[in-house]
Image (cartoon, rainbow, N blue to C red; front, side, top):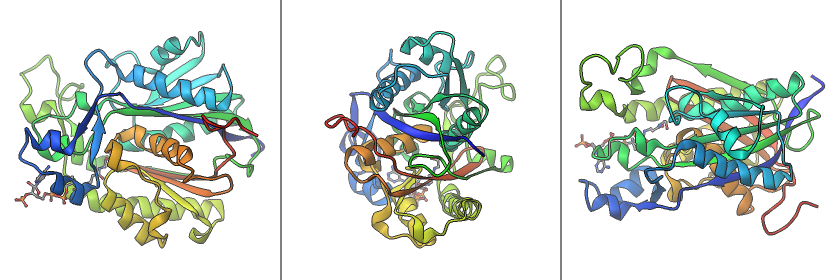
Length: 337
Ligand code: UT7
């Protein structure tokens, strides 16, 4: 391969409204102590009515474009489970909001693994000639989670993260390395919204409360998440010709702090290799990895030269992993050298 997709800009956007554990404990049968000890989450952001997924995506994209110091891209790949509308895709709306006329723009639907799938898709676009691709993960889970379901309402948050990829050389800082992607449709009921598609149509009988909203078999998903991500990382590292001892930082889908710690342990990585901001933002599904990357960059947890492992697991079921060496990116307080 002579061309590689190289990360050259990052940004995130969180809607201003926050919902703390105490806010939730005020109206649901739950406590701050339960939520923190079971998930590591203390706070999450929620988009107000009138704010769509495309607004969050455009907010994150603007910051990533500024970080990369570029004002145009060839393509936009948007990972989301919560599009603005069932039809059309949301990415063209994002392109329009950014003022990019005529660029290729499409959505990728792989739930919490969506950003990894979108990165792999964008790498393919670069390999076949694209010069610059914007990859975004954006979600408004508050629109699909039942606010009265304590198990899910405490976990999920809204937000968006974005990266700019440019054409470059394999092996240079920022170049995306090998990928591993996988799925198992037999597990689709473990994380799902049952009604509203072609299978269970909204034009038929009124869906039950359970079928209308997002449902997750939390405990089963927990165990599968750890083992699938660990296997995926090992497969990907083998493809990349790397060993786990070469990894400096782990940026995994921010599903649950206990999953992040267990995963690091299973992989043989030190606890502090985990880059996490789940405490502040909760689980933002396809947006969680780019939001965590932006957090790691802003807070100097990701430094130029760090070998960074990305891995995710989610609905589908789907999973995926990749690796890159963290590049020297601009900070909002410091232009790039
Ligand atoms: O992002 C896509 C991938 N998602 C994941 O990877 C999420 C994986 N799963 C998880 O993170 C965890 O399974 C949860 C955080 C969802 C749940 O934690 P858990 O330790 O697995 O709890 P549980 O579902 O087994 O429930 C234990 C108890 C239950 O009560 P009983 O049956 O033992 O009496 C629940 O009803 O905790 C109860 N419970 C709650 N209690 C207080 C569930 N949610 C709450 C709550 N507050 N919010």
